[in-house]
Image (cartoon, rainbow, N blue to C red; front, side):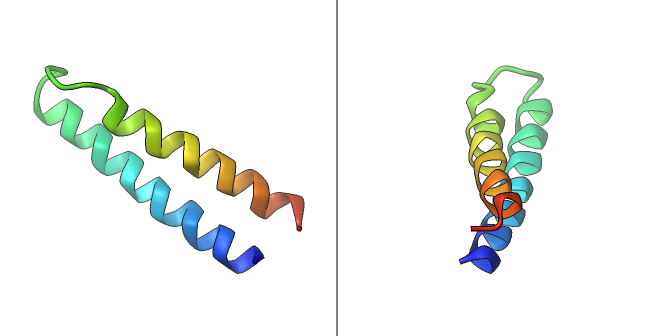
Length: 53
């Protein structure tokens, strides 16, 4: 379960950077949620990974 949380953290981190790039590419004309929502899931899965459960 811990390995799955690490993999999810990495995937959501990559999605966060892709979403931030998309927002910057469009000069901020699109919703910032493209970057924020994956960041929330990356932080949650990272916290789950660090808790050791």
